Image (tube, rainbow, N blue to C red; front, side):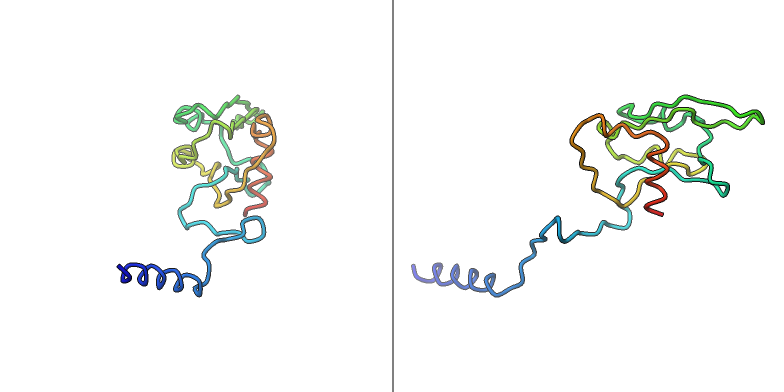
Length: 137
């Protein structure tokens, strides 16, 4: 009868002297794994233009239909996204948009903090995604 009580007390004492594994989140941040798929971002080419060629594959493959794309074309025939909206509220962070992109324009960063007060702030346009790409790179 006393044996299990002593065993329980020994386990409790052992955990009292070990270092806690709790992370005080806002002050201390936990890193992400190497293959972690976090927030989306867009890449630029060497000239500083958006790398996206507006092929529409990301919009077509997105399971929750979180990507809206409107295609534009320059005088020399180069296609670009006139309007690119990513609804981060609907996004399930599957990474299919990153996998299907033929020019590696969109990618998922290791960043994971995406807290907003309103849903409308989670509608990310192409300029916001490009700024995020500059900050991460």
